[in-house]
Length: 172
Length: 74
Image (cartoon, rainbow over all chains, first blue to last red; front, side, top):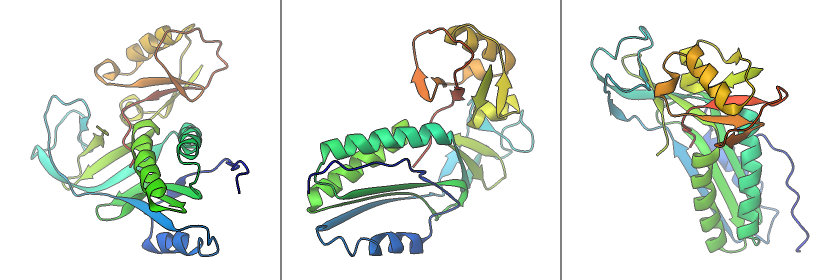
């Protein structure tokens, strides 16, 4: 039972939104692992934020004219276009995964996926899925991995606004 | 040496990579701030071989270099 878990090189990125069917399939793939007693899943969804723009904000750019702010100085997020420094992000994910298995050695498995490309408001762009014999390890691991991915993975998000201007998302 | 650009930095540079000569990471940042208008007003990190570096360090030209604006995953 306690042989070291092998972590192969993985690519967490998928093109486009994460379909609900993908999540359902991920769950059903675990049916043969009867040592699992708990699944914990975090799903990130693109939110239609109302944004107020400051003309002096260097991350605010109009798509149509790079020197002009959005005509209305406000807009609603219609979609986020995600890009990534993919090799570094996957390497960082391997490190985070190893940290998570070191902290929660009882965890059975951990699956992380993130979207690339244009994801519309209301669509899913991020999934963290941990399974363990008991709920506490799965819960804690998902909370940890979700936070660390947001902090440490070089993923960039262009928020496309309703007036076709855009601004660059920054995690806080 | 080739420098990969991402997000708002790629947008400001109008390119996803640039070629710049520099002997150290500080010299590289200085050279890039001359080349990319507005870069000095942004918060960004420099990655050398896919690791973020804070201290000045020499560069041989063999490293994989990247400029990273604030992260926005999740």
